[in-house]
Image (cartoon, rainbow, N blue to C red; front, side, top):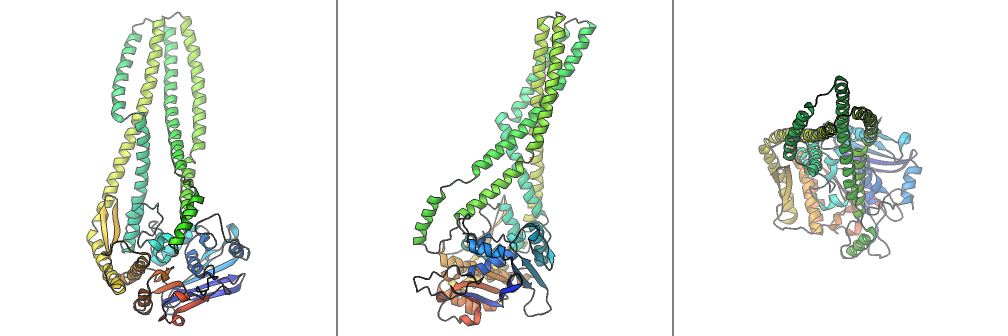
Amino acid sequence: MFLKDLIMENNGTLIRKITFHKGINLIIDETKTADKKESGNNVGKTTVLRLVDYCLGGDGKNIYQDPEFKSKSNSQIEQFLKNKNILITLILKESLEDLNSTEIVIRRNFLKRKHKIQEIDGENLKKDADFTGKLKELIFHSEHEKPSFRQIISKNIRDEKNRLLHTIKVLHATTKPEEYEALYLFWLGISLDSSDRKQELISLKKIEEGLQKRLRKESNLSQINQSLLVINRSIEEFEERKNKFNLNENFNQELSVLNQTKSDINKHSTELSRLEMRKELILESKDDLEKDLAKIDTQQISRLYKEAKSLVPDIQKSYEETLAFHNQMVKEKIRYITQELPELEIALNGIKRKISELLITEKNITARLVKTKVAEELQQIISELNRAYEKKGNLEELKRLWESSIDKVKSIEAELEEINKGIFSKDTLIQERVAEFNKYFSTISLRLYGEQFVLSTDKNDKGYELNISSLAGNLGTGKKKGQIAAFDLAYIQFADSLGIECLHFILQDQIENIHDNQISNLLTEIVSEINCQFVLPVLKDKLPNDIDVKQYEILTLSQSDKLFKII
């Protein structure tokens, strides 16, 4: 799919229409940076990338929110987008040369609930999961949940810090290895039915490991088994001693009722212990997660960032954004794990009431038995016997939890092993795909820098990872962005060579950090040889002098002519 048009409308009135073409697409900011009073910021050149991203399922907050301080936003832009009901339309096209090729028309506004517009080809999909799921189905012809549509396209729109600093580790910092494995295999054209299940199993395994960690604080399975042997011997001894007493029929009947009552108390106590343990586990997990909420002196970090910015002018201010995203994820986990608490409280209160009733019955029967002048020794035996049964019930419940969890982990590990065997069985195909990719990647990097970057795989117990090696070691900011461009362009060539569905456009910010020689090479030679669109927001006077800007520009902005045409 290619970008065809990006249209901005204000209640039906056209604000801008940006038409894209094959090859280089420059969004030019004509601000003269030689004039120290002009910054070249806030005219909207990067916002174009973010509007495309928004139409492809992004949350859109980065269009008007400060990238570092999420509590701060450009209220003028935010109010304009919402109060004026700005509608963004993105048209994707399978081929820009074939007028009859398939088109996907995406329309979104910035309103909520019943006023929300989130359409694909005229169908309003208000649930975000349905919206991105439909896009994945239309563009990549895949209905699997993992990897998500947003993960797949993360390398196509590089406007945020993480995607501008990392070539292939383009997802959030908390992304798990199994999620990356599913993404990498998808990029290589190897889509497995087991990816969803693998990630689900790993999550289930972590839950069971958490339970075992909690149980281990009480005792391990060996200790429980040995304690049960001891308590069973004690019960046998107490039963033998109790049976030596010659009791009348009424006493035996009362004693039978008492024993049944104590048995019921024991059963309910065991259930109470189980529920309380479940509640403790939930609350403990909640406490652990709340401790994980990052609480950092953001003012101090802000001062550090300002100092760093004076040394590195193009540093990205996204600390608080990452922090806030992390905290939001933690809060969502807290909400999920505590949703069972109300039902647990109801069950606990019901069991406690029943135990209280049984204790009253036990007390009354015991009082009647005492009046029969039964020997105090028998009462002592009965009390000890009941305590032994109660302890046995608790131990058996702990044993059941241990054995159940161990069995679940074994089952999960066995299924994971089978899934990994299935994935590892494709190692030959994976290596062939990586080799095919390197044909293009190393060629482009050689043309740019006179050295060949190489993609390789690393197989470990968590699955496959991808790595990029370079003889130059650590790369500077400009060269890193050159590597990113080489990777993204090479991927389109690779996908086309194997018939893998992909987006044929790359949106990359901060291209001016690349040296003039490499920019000229990219813009005048390399990109023109690839079936793609390379969309770049850039300050005009940061481009090399030999670039024919008019040939490539699709939009020109300035301090007097900003993207949304508001001052």
